[in-house]
Image (cartoon, rainbow, N blue to C red; front, side):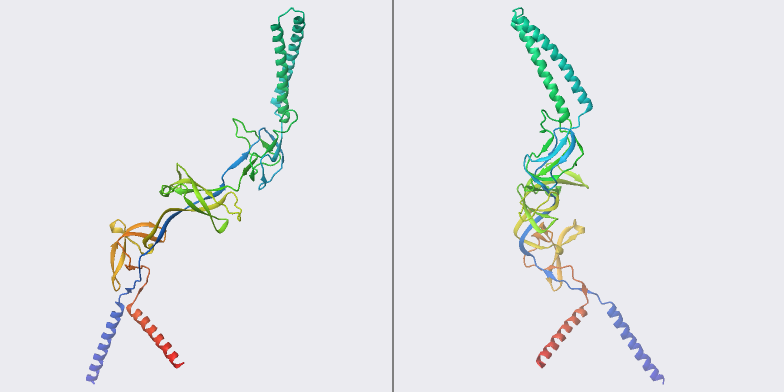
Length: 390
């Protein structure tokens, strides 16, 4: 009995040791990372930047009145196409009481001067006809009389302008006409609004804004880090938010000599002539993005940017890991060139044919890899047996 218990105890002890050893061995197994590789390749690489902005007419003209008054009638609407000289609006003159009263009083004064000059003229003419005074004295009297008549006519014209805005009943100044051909973009006034004439001291009230929508430009801004790489007459591709799947060619015509700080960054205004397509109607003020080519290189060695790593202990120097054996890799520092946001140029450190580690593969256990391999083999064997049976 004692012998049996001893053998049983030894058996259980051995089983416990085997179980514990197996447990610790399975728990201490390390995950093994299996990495794929990619090779560098040659291609053309283009560095671009995108400038946000709007598409606007090349020229916009504001139509302003030559006289102050009230908008009596508007003959056009926003969006109408008009030609030079077409009637836009008519202004009704509202005389200024002070100016009106001053003009009337001035006429009365000049009328008195004229009456006096007429008396002197008639008197001197009679004396001249009798040979009492010289011709010079008579001519002076005649000149004063003529000047008095002219001054009265001028004052009467001023009164007419104050009352009606024009002389002799003409409504030339009260009719607002287009000075250029184009499309009416904005009419900021309505009938009954008071307007002010444009003069040296006042910009005047804008009656309408006219522009030629057949000549459009892109106006946007680029960052100071990229403005130095822009070249005159560079080609741009302009895409509009209102028109999908369509790009318009454009040519850079202007880069601002002075930048403007916006949100901590210095921005420079740019302009480009846009080549329009007759199949699309472009409205002024469409939001747009312009793709600008900054730099281009042909047939250069590149890799995917996702393969890059940066050594924080060595001034963030870029490096990749190159395969030297089965799942064995060696770190190599590299020199980079231009990038298009996906691929980046390699100047040195990597050559064609090198296999570079891809960093996006999850870690797996060796036994899992073996099991997957065996499973695939079993499935292949089963499929072969099925085919043979068929």
